[in-house]
Image 1 (cartoon, rainbow, N blue to C red):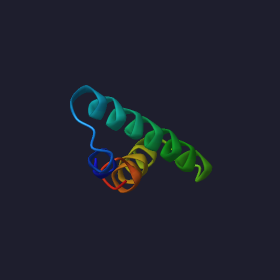
Image 2 (cartoon, rainbow, N blue to C red):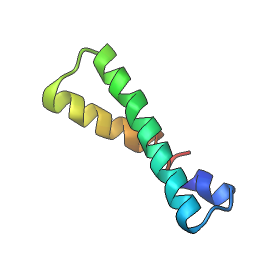
Image 3 (cartoon, rainbow, N blue to C red):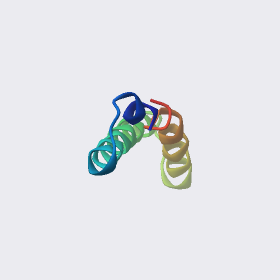
Image 4 (cartoon, rainbow, N blue to C red):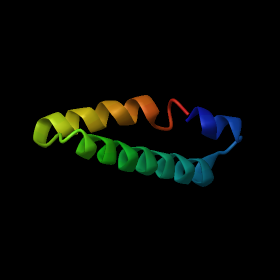
Length: 59
């Protein structure tokens, strides 16, 4: 969300930007978890942590 603030986005544009960032981060984290050969709860936990670390709130 920091990136959205830096771009001075608000309302619908901000929400759309944040959703895209979250989706992009989740996709990257899913690939990383697959490369680590994680599955089930371990994969879900890893993806959740990864998204929090690399998602829109940290951008």
